[in-house]
Amino acid sequence: MANISDNHTAILLFARSAKEEAQHKKLSPDDSDNLFLLDSLKQHAYSVADQASLPLFHFSETKQIGSGFGERLTNSLANVFGRGYENVIVIGADCPDISVSDIHSAEKALACGQMVLGPDMRGGTFLLGLTAEMFERKQLASVSWQTSELLESLRKYADCFQFEITYLAQKFDLNVASDVIEYGEQSAFLSILLRSLHLSIDFQLIVCLYHTYLTFLQVLSRRGPPLMGTAY
Image 1 (cartoon, rainbow, N blue to C red):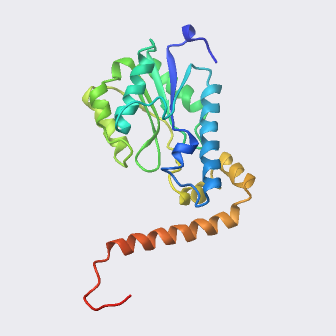
Image 2: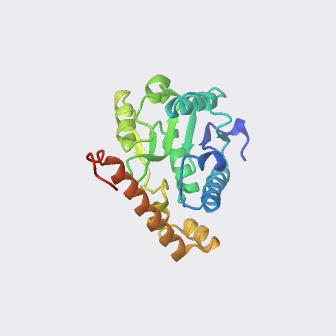
Image 3: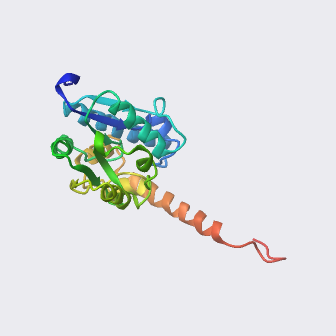
């Protein structure tokens, strides 16, 4: 890892521990497989960030301060900027195809004074790059984090302060079990994980059944109360 005095840019890995993340995200109906996938994704993100040879700060749930996602993230950003860095690149642990070149591209754009957005397939981002001058804490905390409107919300944030934006190539991230199947063949890293678990066909079947079950529960929850005298 590069010496702090040699760098103006730092990486912020904003990701909960696999055990904590497993309480909120299911990439597999099987708890042990889910934990393995989440832990592998986190280790992969850490490895990619480390290979970028920039100062790296990992903020898991034990270091995140605040009541909501936006507040916790902006507090973490303030911590890193407070150490004297001019630029910060934020990544999470749900994009299996994030690469060292993504981070280097973001580093170059930040050096030119441009905000960096790495779009995902759902209207969110897998990477965010900010300079210290772009860090407006209150306004940034209030953007539409963890929604399909995030990318647009960040674009409006940049427009409000007249920041230029560099967009990286769009990538997918993993939020639900069906994503693992949908993108499994498109990602070399994800394919390796699936093969290591010997999941392939069995995993696809389990996920399909699990998705059907969740859909059934959603439909059931929208049904009104039964009519008087009706038996089920």
